[in-house]
Amino acid sequence: MLAPPAGDPPPTPRRAYRATPSGQAAFHEAIELQKRTRGSRLLGAHVVAAVAEMEHGTAPRALRAMGIAPAELAEAARREAGSAGG
Image (tube, rainbow, N blue to C red; front, side, top):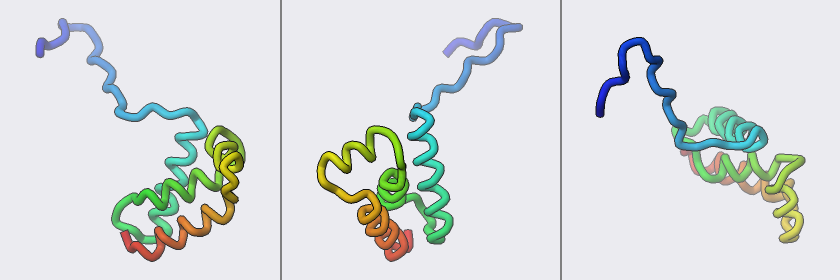
């Protein structure tokens, strides 16, 4: 790879994951749950719990459309995250 010409700013690093604000909030909440459950790694259960707790957006609408109670899903995911010991 060629170096950028002198005086040009370095290229902006690209993120692997670009999320909407609600997706970013869910991801940050998943990380907080992971910390609260003292897990050593982020689990799918952390993400499921965070998404299920969202009040607005595509995910909660999809859960309701499928007949899934978001509060029950969030509780089950929190239990799984806590028992996994990540």
